Image (cartoon, rainbow, N blue to C red; front, side, top):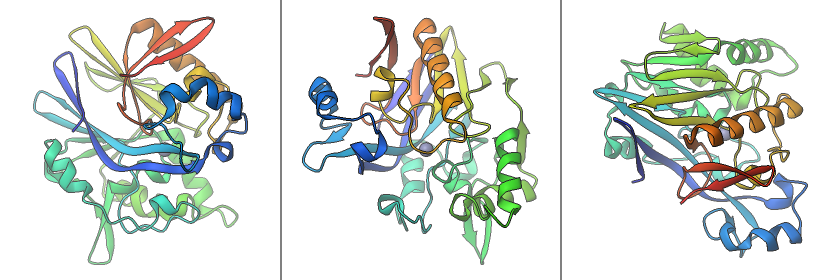
Length: 292
Ligand SMILES: [Zn+2]
């Protein structure tokens, strides 16, 4: 179990999957042998599988505990979901809720679920199938969604051209939460409470946000998918293939990297491999990760 302390809070990683996924050149068109040679000393084994040439990605949630409050940040893919073209996330049957319990929370203990954005791999455990209906997994939780992301996907999901969006997960994992009256739609920037501020970081999705945590003078940022891989810290113009606005995604990445470098915040991404969280240094006119 990976646990970080941030001031008076703790942040535990709850793993869903972690392993080789896409070919490096398929994810990043800028990838080449020179890049591999320059970064080989840290890429394998945590961030790249040298034998297969596949990029390693993690899918995990962060369980944030502030005093007695338990907050789940991003809820992964979920079990039993069809994900065409993503064999490593298709029809999962994993003990995610058992791992969450080991990290310190049963479903009924979660006070707040917060999604950085509404892509399929960030909303999966929001709901569970019960008696043929999708119902909130965390019965006592309030769910915080970005309003611009919600509205973007609601419109596309209802259109004959694009719906159902995100492999159906908008209908299965987002709308039932709203219909159950458990969703809070917020427009960033938005201060949630004395510890957490929600800031816009759009581009990967239309309403993507990051969650800034501050406790006793210590800072952390849950950055969602502002970057998926540490190579994007070295090369902030490298985009993951799926973005609502690729150029804006680059701008947001540089902004968040600059912000994390200047504040010294602990950076908690959703897909970066072990040790899963770390810091950003500004140097040589760019950025360097200091993870582990
Ligand atoms: Zn993601």
